[in-house]
Image (cartoon, rainbow, N blue to C red):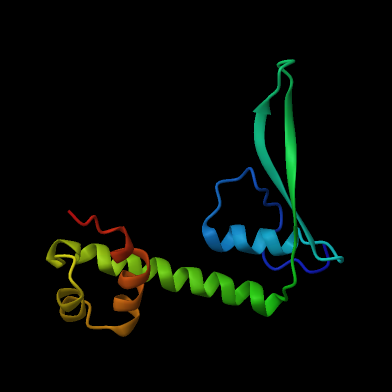
Length: 120
């Protein structure tokens, strides 16, 4: 494709890191803004495996693609940092504010981890 970001010879069947997957999605978006992603393999009643294709309407540029990959990398790095101090967290906002000194880490904890706290 003419808008290849950095995915030559890659496929959705490959083991991809998230940034590669995001770039491959961008590369597979056609000129009409339709993204084609292979779907799950299904066993139909006649025992024939058929592959479905997901089609999504996309409106993004190379800049959007790179920004999405950067945002994912930041989130992933924040989650790794939180994991390294997870044993110090007791689930309270006060404790998380103290342990997770960085605003980015606290925001990540509050958005993606604290919401799963089980209240007894």
